[in-house]
Amino acid sequence: MARTAGSHSDITGPRVRAAALRLFARDGYAAVSMRAIAGEVGVQAGALYNYTPDKQSLLYDLMRGHMTDLLAEMPTNSDALPLTRLRAFVEFHIRFHADRPDEVFIAYMELRNLTPENFAVIETLRRQYEDQLESILKQGVADGEFDVADTKIATLAVIAMLTGVNTWFRAGGRLSLDEVSAQYWGMVRKAVGAQ
Image 1 (cartoon, rainbow, N blue to C red):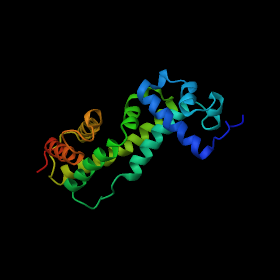
Image 2: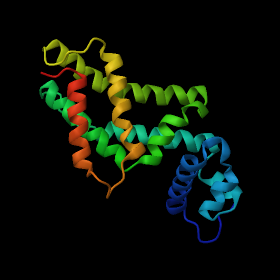
Image 3: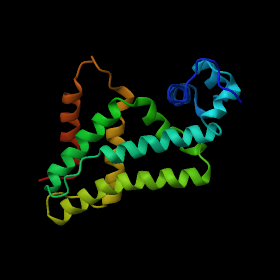
Image 4: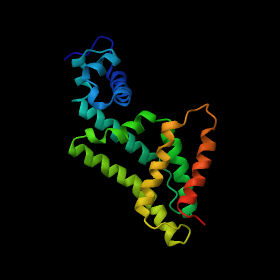
């Protein structure tokens, strides 16, 4: 099928992904049709298949892209003390996600709509991220810096708490992102019993 006049794959492909991201976050994956995505982009519905095999592939690509970007940008300071590494993790998580509310929403709320094969890939990437935090907590416990009974539960609790910032934080609000990050660092530090 020919492209719509004036469309370019290097421009339209990213526009398709951006439209799918917005619509999935706003309306939910199940409620969004390929026709709605095409309408948002300004192309014929059939033209979408020049850029993606199907709606499931769009969802998977968005989620995988989010996770691979997260893992690629995560600070690597494995030689630092656990407390320093934990603070870097907290600040990174909040800052990385603050600019990506739609990606975060989809990453958590649309897992149920992935095929089992796609879910397995995303779950593996999520575990890689969680494992980074858990390794910090385990080292802190081993060094006597942290007092955590179960590092896996603490890992999931910390990530859930940090990710929650996206549900309420707005730039230009009462607190700056730096102030929010500092307060969350204080709460995380207490949560892991940091010395």
